Image (cartoon, rainbow, N blue to C red; front, top):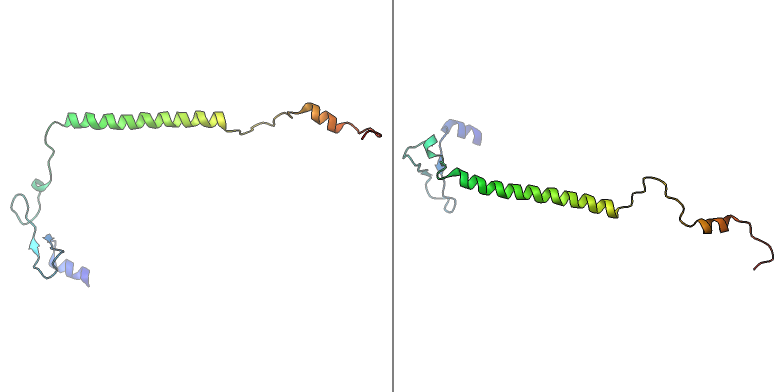
Length: 109
């Protein structure tokens, strides 16, 4: 029902006072003084764009470089500290292994 009422009213742009619901709806005031918004009401950039562009590019490039350095550092740290054991490691205590495999002699305690 609400949608049908909106369709009957047509495309009107109003500025509502949300603090006081009983107040009458006031039409929005546009820059060119008209009732409907036009392209003249859009904000237009002014001033030198190159200065602002260069400032933003230095920030973006510093974030990019710091991210690359952090990724490389994390990869190096992981490679140095992580023990993945891609291949079977050799038994580190060869002498101990030989002693355990040898048959025990009787009489020694």
